[in-house]
Structures are given as structure tokens and as C-alpha cells.
Image (tube, rainbow over all chains, first blue to last red; front, side, top):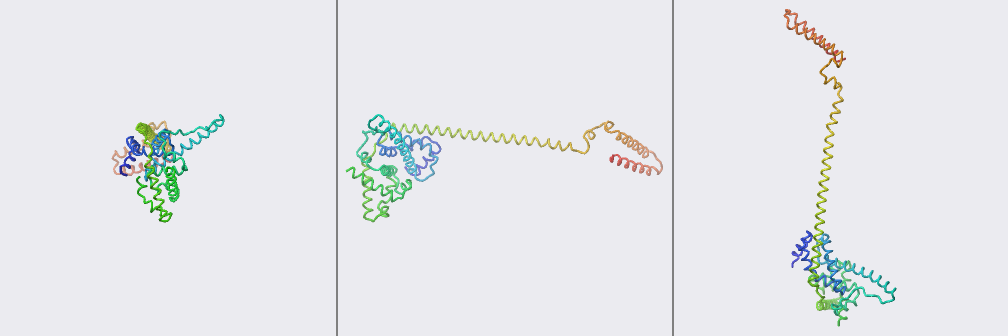
Length: 175
Length: 173
């Protein structure tokens, strides 16, 4: 699919064409799901976040003013993931309080789908949250370092350094 | 990979470190990318994608309907505004002839006298003067009709002078 094709689809989406939205789900659905799955480790949560992302896309497509659509979409995906993290943190605090009260172990708040958790997922958990998100953003969004650094509003040297150290550490963990 | 594959990693990294270190860092990143490709994430089920499409279509439909309703309300509002402005403009234009009528009533001569055909009711002086004017007119007619042999023109001139004088007195009150 060419850039021109994508532009036509986006124009259709801005007009409210349902078929164009379906095409976007077809094009980006798998990559966005992979991004959410590698960050949450849960298929169920990833399904929910994917659904939330595309609903948000319908609501916010009017605010897209050109430039990298992948960058815009993955910035939205990142915001959704961070909202999810905040929700989970609130949930964890409540559950911890409850656990202390009943003198039991804290319960896990993110249900991990063990059937899908592979060696990479285990290794990813060992990385710093910010680095893990950065690596996944770069891999699934297919954005360049320059675009990612602009998206994250940080110097390109910082982005390069984080990705380099993160991937090196990941490889060490996997070996 | 599209954009990230297009960039020259070694060149990019060389801007921050020496050539040797840049080469090593680029190799680390490329091997890391290969690892991620090797351990690809599971794919979403077809049912999940179908469900997402369904949800997205429903939201798009709802938004389209809301947008349409907003446009209708905006058009209705605009039409109402036009009607209100038109009604106000009509009312304002209707008031203008009334003002002109008021100016008409400020005339120096009272309408009763101006419009009245029976002057005997208006003013007793007017009756007297009107009778005099009538008498003189009759005399003038008589003089003009009778053949007086050259004096007729002088008498007619006297009567005309008298008539002008009476008419002047009449208008002076």
C-alpha cells in the first residue's frame, strides 16, 4: 500500500466512511495488538486496548493534520497504554489496602495469559518500563529514531542510547 | 520495517560516538531487531478484529448522525434568525408611514377648514367676504357683458383693484 492510498483512506475516515475505518483496522490492527501485547503480556487486555484505540481513532481523526500517520496513531496508542497503567496503579493500591486488611498476599492485577507468554515476554519484564515501551514503539510503529525522538520530545541521542542499551540487555537476557 | 530500516544507523550513531563504537552499537541494535522479529508477538484473532471493526463502524455511524443533527440544528437556527430579522425589518418599515401622517397634521391650516366644503359653518367672516366676492363677481360680469361705450374697461379695472384689495384683507384676517 502506497502513501497515496493511505492518504485516501484517511480522507475517507475524516468523511466518516465506515469502510475506510475498517481498512485502517486491517492495516494497523496486528501491529497495534503486538505493541499492546508486548507491553501488557495479556491477550485480553490487548484486545480491550486495541478496541479502545480504534474507537479513539474514530473520535480523533479530525485532529490529524498530516505528517506521519503511524507516528500519530502510535502516540495515541501510547497514551491509551499510559491511561491503562494509571488505572492499574489505582487498582493495585486499592487491592494492596484490601490485602493488608485481610492479611493475605497482594493479588496480581494484570492477568497474564500464560499460554501466550514466551521467553521474550519474560525478558521484557526485566527491562525498565520506559525503555521497554520505547523499544516496542520503535519496532511496531516502524518509525525512525528521529521521528520517535520528536514524538517523545527528547534528544535523538537519548533515544538512540536507550534503544541500544535496552536491546543489548534484552539479548543478554535471552541468551 | 519501513522508515526505521531506511535510516543509516551507523551514520546516525557516528554523530554521537567514534566510528568503531558506532559500528558496534549499530550491530547491537540490528541483532536486537532480529531477536524481536524471531520472537514475534501473537496475532489478534479474526473474531477480535471483526469485533473491533463492528464497534468502530457503530461509533462512526453515531458520530455521523450527531454531526448531521448539528448541521440541521445550525441550519434551523440560521433560518429562525433570518425570519426574526425579516419580521423586525417589516415592523420597522410599517412604522415609517405613521410618522409621515403625523407630519401631515402639523399643517398651518386646520384640516376641518381645509377639507370642509360647507364654509358657512367654518367662519361667519368668511361668509360675509364670500358674499362680497360673489357680488363683485356679478357686477364685473354685468360690466363686461353691458356695452358702456368705452367706460366699461375703466370700471372693470376699478372692480378688479377692489377685488384684489378684498382678497388681500381676507387672507390677512
